[in-house]
Amino acid sequence: MFVSNVVRAFSHGGKVFGYNGRSSSIVMLICLCLISGGTALAQAKVTVESEISKSGSLVLEVRGVDDASVSATPVERISPNGKQLYCAYDIDITKDGREWQPEPEQPAMVSMENTNFADGQLLDIYHEGANGLEFVATVASENGKITFPAHSFSVYIVAAAGDYARLKVNLHQADGTVVTIYVKKLDITQGDFNRIVYNPGMGTPADGVDCMGWIANESYDEESIPDALTFDEVRDSIRNRVTSGVTDGTQLDFYAMLFKHYSVTYLAENESVLHTDVMPFRADADNSAMNYSVNALYTPASSTQNFEGWLVSTRSDGEHIYGHDDDFHNYANSTEIKVTGDVTFRVNVTEGHWLIYHENGKGATYQAADFIRAGEVTVQPASVLMRRNGCTFDGWWTGEPTTPE
Image 1 (tube, helix red, strand yellow):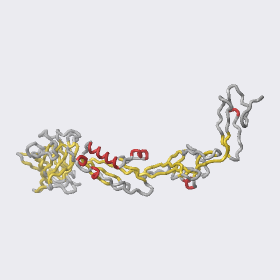
Image 2 (image 1 turned 120 degrees about the vertical axis):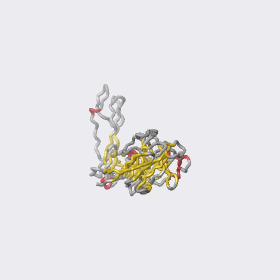
Image 3 (image 1 turned 180 degrees about the horizontal axis):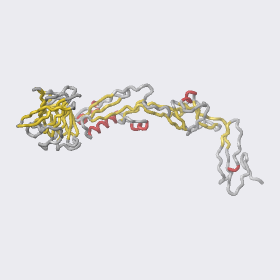
Image 4 (image 1 turned 120 degrees about the horizontal axis):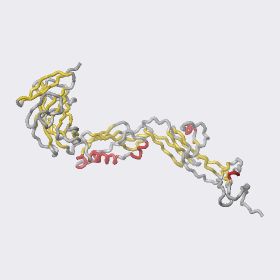
């Protein structure tokens, strides 16, 4: 079992003392309840309530230290960003008579609770480090409590958020590369925004993959294509998000929209392309078959021809239609098929003649013209279909009707 020490701190006569207890936790929790105007520590217990002062409490979660004493002293500072100053504390951890600092890759987590922190309020955290004043993070208060990382201990300052909170923008390119850009409000008002939010391109897609634009929804599909953004529109989205206010570290992702597609092409009698339909689907999707409705209009060049529908152009085209087994099968418009690859249709036009029926006056049943293919025998329409009020159907004439004498 891993065992570490929990430093319990208390105050007496304005001085800070510490003693060790044992715990099965491998994380050291040091609870400090602060009194405004002096260095003081409350009785030892892990809590977010201050029994000494209503001004708030400070909780330090320190990894990798034991037998240590902790102090936090309120200090006077001005607000680094010109906004309202909430508090400033000089936090010190001593181990074996020496100042202790966290390891570079193991920052401490500092939590502060203050009744003056409104829920959802954005606060800027600053640290007086070895290189001077450093911006740490912009955090949001939750239930009057804020939490931020501390890579070293000295003076920490809490102020109302200024314009330094950064939006983390991740641009996911076609080849899997992620380009990250950080943007803050001052980049809009004082910086060269278009230079800061530069266009890295969409990357190099794999063979057979098309980039359709950018989108903020990772779960995009072919229905999302109308929502694809240009990079100028991506910039606008970033500008609007930053202008509306962000917490430091807020993340916004844009994804290159990657699609494969099947195409259905229709050829005229002279092999010219009449029309092509493109059916896109996500490049990483398992689309073995896509539903498609055959639909392309065609008007024959001669009155002795009739448009019947469409035939596959080659045998390989037929192999891309689920269930296709006859290369001379006619696919009439509105036929529903499943496509598993690119398909090219050629127009199916037949030679013959039109048989046209005249009603011989108004009020008779309309009989649509029939196309009789060359070599076929003309079939007379059923007489039962021919009706006219007050008349009896007596047959058909050829040529113009005559009046019997």
